[in-house]
Image 1: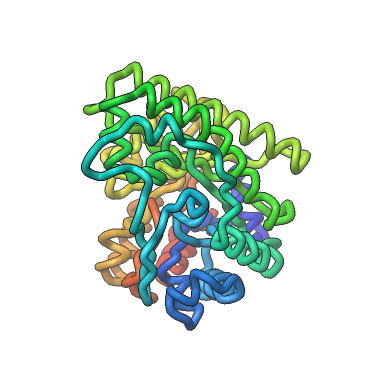
Image 2: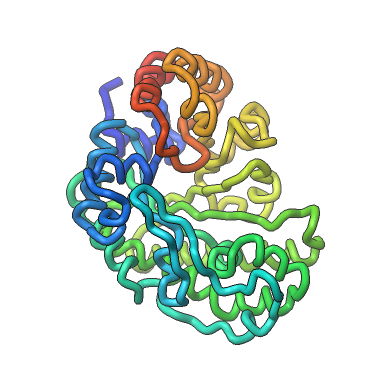
Length: 361
């Protein structure tokens, strides 16, 4: 088989065809920032440096599919959400919910504010445009966002949102449906503009609330909102681009609940990207139960083997993953989330070498 470009390889996999090699998916705001040559303080406010870091990341580590990496809170800036920015990190400083005195009025009084009204969202959009123009015809680019409940959690603080969903579910769900549903659709589809139709895939981040704490009725209402949100995003993307863009997931955390997610979203999804190793859903089960319906993206242990191991251990990890999945489904070798700042360069490079050794068709 003739060698494919990175983008061709990934799209071939999503279209349920056989590529030349198993595609590799990973991304990292930390490693991209390190490659930009400037501190996070400068990186976060300079679209050219932000783009440069992401382009260098692609050139150096050679993922077949990746995302333009930026922090989660930039789109919430119009609501007054604040972050700390150090030389190397961005993390939340101020959300909307009171951490000590739960108050349903915060949710009842919530109003729509454009996710692109803030300075940092404009910086991100400009950087995404630069990256798309530079490498978007060769490397598969995923843009992605979360649904209304997850975005509300980011806005309020995840722990506070979980607390409030249990204490006053009507106010919580009311804000998710009245405000964050439109907001999530607008943000997801507003990300299309910088990519100028080069986007290979849209990634829907789904994070269900803990089933041990949330009653089934609330869980079902959350799922209803998430499904409606994705349907509206898909329809709006179709109107904007004139085509259907493949839909993937980003299911973060140690309890991905793939059975529940696939029951609710069904054939709206083309790919399941989730955290394994590290979660309670074995890759073997995902492949055997779901591999005939979806491409499966998993297999990079980004918090242990890739971060703390050796290139030989990375090689063994990839071989083990390929033995499970390669010839049994359309498979993408993927990390569960972003690669950490201390990930050794030699280990990231070892992914490509091991894929070429074990993942060629």
